[in-house]
Image (cartoon, rainbow, N blue to C red):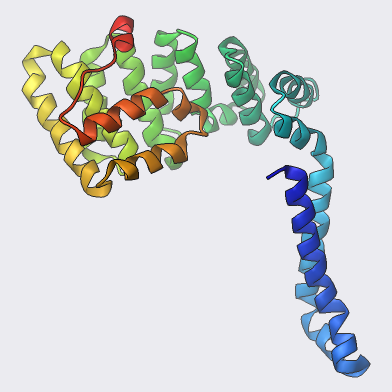
Length: 285
């Protein structure tokens, strides 16, 4: 549904509720009882009126932004956001995330890293808040060693909501950087302990299909850990339809979209006898 349609529907709903509370008592209860009703309920009416006002102010203040998002005009959206964020120095987490995601849609990893550098000077905390976007850009931009350093310095200090994904990407960056022992350590921990089924499955999958063959001395140990992780995920997500629903829910996130093909492959591995990792990844290694 379009942003404008959502705005109109929500505004109409609030107006109807306000009209019901303000006008209907006068016609149904009479002036005296209506006055008593208003005196008893004025805080609720005031809150609704404030919500209506704030919602309208927010929409009209961001109408250009919503219009560009609706049209999916990414180059124009980037220019608009650069004006607001960089030139007008309005570094907010929401705008930075949106600008970084827009760069990623345009496959402009260099600009994402440039935005990271500017943000680190103005508001360093916002780099940590958007660590997944900035770190993923380093991987897509082939700065693998830079991605390793980026995720390593942040995996223990980011907010809990993204901590496990940052740890997973740290392991993935280690794998791409051919630091197989270190990658095995990170993925083993996540395969055993992660409460996120997608993270646990991806970790188990890479342990079994990519890392174990590269570390012959630990092959059996890593595959045992992988099997435990696989069974743990399958207890939580019993059918491949459950898995597909989980990864579809994540598909709108840039950090997940970047590895979506591995999510699909991990799903096939989870619910079949297992398959080999894609040749593309082996080429990177």
